[in-house]
Length: 345
Image 1: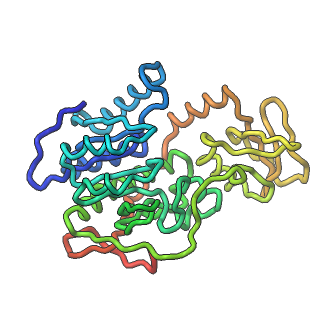
Image 2: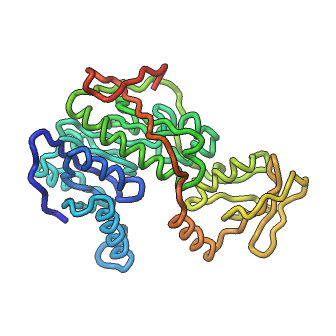
Image 3: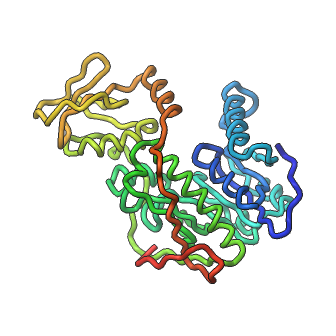
């Protein structure tokens, strides 16, 4: 998948640096649907070099997702892994003649020398409403801190030499319904990024949106620590259920039982009001009190791990979600997407 279609007049060309997943597939298709081109997709390289069954399966899955979201659109795929040879990557990019670099969830800062290769620099998608929850684990920390309905959403911003620190171009805020299940959360993030890449990113590249600087202040740095994954009896049933939706598959949520951490899988049922008794573990299940009731969960294991994967495959999001509310920052004329004037980004 390396040949490129002929460019049309006024068509924008972008290089994307991200893995191809259920999050990013709709983003890629949104860029194409807006009449633009994908010069290349830079994807994470594999830890094990050379041929292996695992690498073959990952490449096959990536190819399948590209076919699903892009159809027969030809795309150049560049595998780029540790140790990152930025100079080597930079030598491959000028021939693509892209206008902008677009990034999502890349694990390290992209050097300025690479951003300078693109006339419009780099844009990044961050799954929180910046400047709140900068950092590597915003979705996890938003739920762990109970701030998902306050600062949850997706931000499109310019890339700089610092993490998640550039001017904000557009945002899509989330509501409680976007966090009803893991499938809902994934679909909401993907839909938000698709809308932003269709409307706001092209407007920025064409000079119709300038963005607004992020305010200075002491904001939460979104790094997930071990204690964020631990369940305590003062948490509500709904809060623990939401933790499981977002953290359950990776890295998991845990309950302390006699000094040992027990990893939880599915919630089985709700047993009634709190009893004041400690956790009771039997036959692969565990009962324990929470602030507003006693619940029973399955205990995580190999079989449950497979069931959780099957659950993720067949889960469906809630129907009838409204179109994302895209907020645009720094619109310069009436041709640009609709701008809002919030009290702060």
